Length: 39
Image 1 (cartoon, helix red, strand yellow):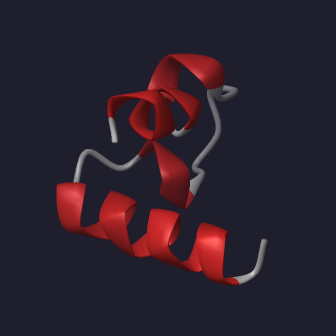
Image 2: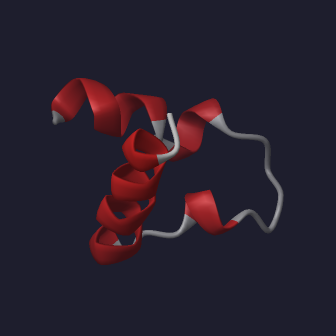
Image 3: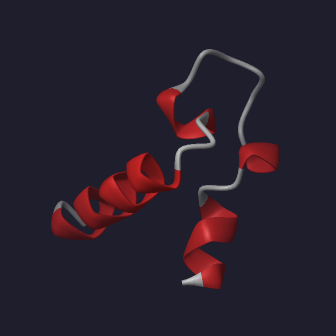
């Protein structure tokens, strides 16, 4: 899961009010889950 977290890492995103920039781990796992579901 570390490689996946690196893709969703804050440093890879622009400095915008993007929900992906949240520090909430649950939200990240939720996004990763949907990312693979819709992939």
